[in-house]
Length: 498
Image (cartoon, rainbow, N blue to C red):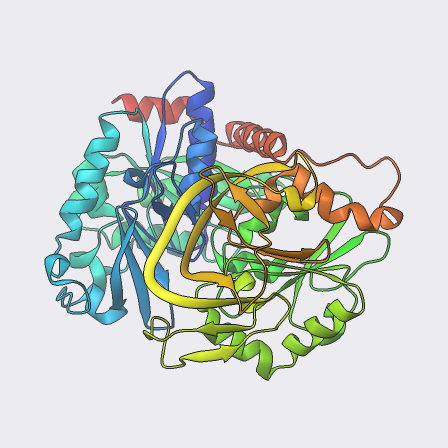
C-alpha cells in the first residue's frame, strides 16, 4: 500500500508507476483503492463506474479495469454531499457527516440503508487478490486523521485486512516533510506502525545530494528505511484525477495554433476528456470562463458537469452563455460533451428534482434538443461511427450520465454518432455545432482530425495526427524508468517477499 502524509502527495502517480514496473518485471499486478472521492470517473467494460485513477493504473498494469479495483466511489455534489457509487452503481446521496459518523443511510433505498461498507470493500479486495499478484493498493488523504480512525475504510484498517506492506509517501515540495512523515508514523497505533515498512520522499526539486543527510536523519528518527527520493517532473504526462491539477492549466489563447477553449464550470467533471488535445502539437487548449478569452477561440468545448442545471444557471448569470452564442454566430465551432451537450439544447428539464428545485432552465439554444433529467444513470463503454464527420470515421469511448436527450418539437433526427448497438447518440447541426454523450470522444484521432479540418491554415506545416494511445503507453514507461532510477526497487521486492 502506498499511503500518504496528506492529499496530493503523489500516491496515485507512484501507484501507476509500480503497476507498470511490476508488469515489466513479469508479474500480473492490479490496482486497488477501497474508497475514492473524485468527480473524474470511468466506465468499466461491464458498464459500471470507478474512479479514473484506478482505470489509469489498470491501463498501466496492462489489464481491463474492474469495479473491484475501486468498490466505493464518492462523487461530490456540493461542499457537504456526495453521490455514493458502490461496486459501480449509484446507491444514493449522502451528507458527509452522516457518511463518516452515523452510518444510518436514510437517503438510500431501504434494501441498501444498512450496508456494511467495510465488508463490501474487503470482499472486493479479496476477489481481486485471488486473480492478481501483486496488488498495488492506494490510501486516501492522510493516514494521521486519528479522529476518523474508527470509520476509515481505505488506509491502515484496509492494510491490516490485506496484510499489506505500507510505504509512506511524503511531499517535500510543500515543506515540513520531516514533521509530516514522523508525525504520520508516531500517530499510528503500535499495531499499525509495524505495517509501515518504507518511506518515499516525493516531488524533490534541486540537487538530490542536498538531501543525503536528511534521508539518514529521517531513517534514524522514524526507524523506517527511506526507499527513495523521487524528483519532481514536468516532462512525463499521466492523466490526473484531482481537480487541483486544473489550476495549473493554460488560461489564455495563443497565436499560431488552433485555440480550443474548454469552458471552466464549477462542477466540471471528466476533464481527462481533453488530455489528448492538450498534448496535440496542432492545438493550444486552455480552460476559461473569461468572456474575452472565449471570443479568441477557434473551438469552444462545453465539458461534462456533475450538476448540469446549476452550471447552466451560472453560465447564463455570468455572461459566458451569451459569449458562447456570440462566438458561434461569428463562425466558432462549439462542441458539447455530456452535461455540456445538454446545456447546448433548447432546455434542460428536471421534473423529478434529480438535481435540485429548478424544474426547467433554458439552454443555449445551439442544438434543437431537449433534456429531461432522470434518476437512472447510464454507464457503459461504447464503440461508434460518426458518419456526420465523414464516411469511415469511427471511435471508442464511454458514457456516464443521467438524463435523456431527444429532438425538440419537430426537429429532425440528426445524430452525432451511431453506437455499436444501433442506438443514436448526440446531435449534429453541422461541422461547427454538435453535441455527444460520449466521454473520451476526443481520444480518437479521426474525430480530432475532423474537428481540426476547417482550421488547416492555422496548423503548423508537417504536424502529424496525434496517436494518444501510443503516447500514453510511452508515458507509463517513462514514469516507470523515472521511479526505478530513484527508488530502490530491489529493496521494495525484499520487503514484499518477507
